[in-house]
Amino acid sequence: MISSTGYPWAMRTAAFLILGLQIVAILTVRPRTKPVPKKMPVGRLTAPFKEFPFVMLLLGICILTYGIFIPIDYLAVQGLDQAYMSQEMSQYLVSIFNAASLFGRLVSGYGADKIGRWNMFIMACTLSGITEFAVWIRAEKPSIAIGFAVMFGFASGAFIGLFGALPISVSPLPEIGYRLGVVFLASSIPALTMAPIGGAILQNSANGWLDVKVFGGVMCLAGSAILLISRWLYTDKKLLAHANSSNCESIWT
Image (cartoon, rainbow, N blue to C red):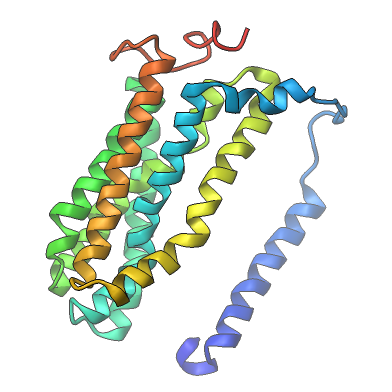
């Protein structure tokens, strides 16, 4: 559509499609039970920020978002500019990434039931960072760029699939919605700033794409390490325990 109708109408068409689907949802989706408004005490609003493990969770998610979304945002541009792919093929890198991500989300969901949500999430995000260092840095040919899109898409699928499961598993029932919103707020900051930061690194650094790739990989590994510390604290400093509400009951009672 970009080539036939232009970029503005391609974006408008996507927006109209989303709007139409949302209208269907608004007209058809109903709550199972009637919502009962409840006041949340001020103490509960500030509670997440007084829990060091939860603060580490917020920090880890914030940093990790940079590492996960920098490659997604620059996949097509890097493929066109550095891997010398055709413009048409470079635009398909994001589609290839999303296709692989679907399988990554399914596998990570199954793995989370076997080894724990936090364990699966941290392992997959660490693998995502390693993939950025091991494959994306060397993606100067079309075949390697495509291979990276597949590998990174599969590994990073856990970020989307299990993102909300982490705060839910360590939050008291009355605060689940609020704490989940706080985690999404923490991820919104890097989601808004990662593209300008990546662009500034690309334009102003001496090594160009190399520095962008290293930045993404470092953010992935650093965010995963901070989440590992949060999990370690939530499980009473036990490496093999699962971080869940039963492990953390003493924290929020």
